[in-house]
Length: 250
Ligand SMILES: Cc1cc2nc3c(=O)[nH]c(=O)nc-3n(C[C@H](O)[C@H](O)[C@H](O)COP(=O)(O)OP(=O)(O)OC[C@H]3O[C@@H](n4cnc5c(N)ncnc54)[C@H](O)[C@@H]3O)c2cc1C
Image 1 (cartoon, rainbow, N blue to C red):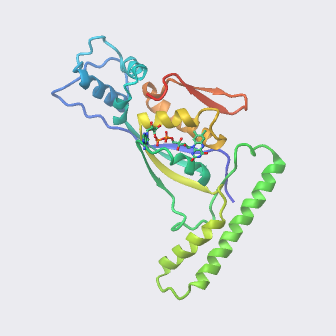
Image 2: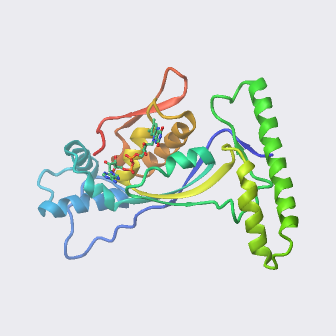
Image 3: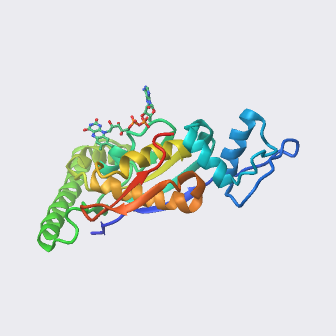
């Protein structure tokens, strides 16, 4: 039985910026295409492509965040593959609607007989609690396997095997725990990511989604520092990472 103790976050896609020949910006400083795209959109609003204040992209976007002119950040979309999170964590994640798109593993089509499970961070490191938890999820998985077999037999009269398997799995999944591992592709624009990260990296967030949000933040900060650098990661009193943000919900 595979057990995840931390999420895995991989960048799947980033913006590609194609600057038009006829309307160029006087760039200053290095920047990624997603950062340039946001600056480009912001400068178009005031036709300030000649960069009168001679700002670098980082300085320009810092001012955008300070002014709360967050709509220009919506042009830059980042797609992450998130693995090693539980079904309960993904349920919390998909509550973030504005600016996000999701594609999540289907428990109706995918056989969960060998599914992995995600250990809650509060349990990790305590040998007794870990052993008890492992026993419980293993028992649930065994019940799932038995239920699928029983349902396949019960509905043997259904000729279409794919349909029969789907019927068996969709009913049997009801015995799987919240801890069942999920893989999910998440597309979000930079403004949407910022709003989600602000809520879910804070100390008030549930520990697992907090760990997931911190992992997403690290990937996004590496990819587009000017869009996400005002988040500061620190170790909270509960000894887990949390983050605070300088510019609230831009
Ligand atoms: C610590 C914590 C505890 C939580 N506990 C619970 C709980 O017990 N039960 C529960 O059900 N949920 C709970 N939630 C989820 C929470 O209620 C939100 O669903 C989730 O945080 C997504 O936030 P959002 O709606 O702002 O995000 P999004 O849907 O991404 O929206 C982003 C922003 O867009 C705007 N917006 C989006 N949709 C609309 C709209 N229809 N009308 C007007 N403005 C809109 C709002 O400004 C909103 O903040 C919890 C969240 C957190 C962080």
